[in-house]
Amino acid sequence: MEGNRSSSQSQQNRDLLRKIKEFTRSIVKDLSEERSPLIFIKRFRNYCTSLDATCACSSDLSKGCDILTLERQCHVHRIDVLLRVLLAVQQLLQENRHGSKRDIYYMHPSVFSEQSVVDRAINDLCILLQCSRHNLNVVSVGKGLVMGWLKFVEAGRKFDCINNLNTAHHIPVLVEEVKDIISVAHYILVVEKESVFQRLANDRFCNRNRCIVITGRGYPDISTRRFLRLLVENLHLPTYCLVDCDPYGFDILTTYRFGSMQMAYDAKFLRIPEICWLGAFPSDVEKYGLPQQCLLPLTVHDKKKTEAMLQRCYLQREVPEWRFELELMLQRGAKFEIEALSVHSLSFLSEEYLPSKIPGCLQAFNSLEDICEM
Image (cartoon, rainbow, N blue to C red):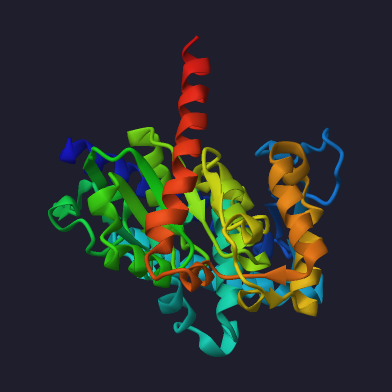
């Protein structure tokens, strides 16, 4: 099995190197014939601002194309960056090594000027070469954490979370190397912040609840999203997401479920359509008796971000109940953090709030399973 995996990886590298060679040859040919190369980069999006249910954003097809040419001055720098990053990727593939986006940035910091320029070039290369970022051997420094009823192996290294249920383990960066996944968990709980993750660990939440807990520590990196998707696909467990009741928490939730606009070209491999929003909801203020002093006013920026998110087509099309809660937040002009639940007691989150939420969600998941089996 390990030999097959290695052979498959080598073949994939050879295919990508062949595509890179064909691409660079075509550019050299155009230049030698005194023609400006034309580089076609397809555009992808995972949402638009049309509330028409017939929009095409639900498909994974491209939604247009950018044509880069040296004849346009505004494209010259983008092409320069693209070719420099391509050279770095080619080297990584040839040497079968991995490098970070930051490594690539520091190869030409004066040319790239900022990390986002490299990030865009990497996304452009993925679209041109029709692959995912990890296929380029470009990785990010992993920041996600996991604990609970789970065992797995990554690149020959064993991870036994069950042995220490409430101890945080770093999510592997090389998710494609993860195998032999074993779990007796009943569900997966994704929490937005490390502080909430640590609160659950301190309360020994996994001792009393047979689950897997994951945090991306804010906006999740690709490794966290790929690892979560791998668990969902292999374990077929109901998956819940707990985020702050504010625009950023909601945006993180939609990143897990629908993917990000920046990586819309790869959304089909990163999104978790099965994820259920557990909270925190604006309506939780009354339900759980949060006092007024626990609420914070929405800033002008918060309101603008919320109004923009309300225009996303997938909310109207797929989760109108999420849209209702977002509208309620905007209407009330208030937000609150998950930690605000500690106003009742430090253990209120693990002993009262989550147990009151999850049974209902489990029942809904089991009902859906029964319908699918009919």
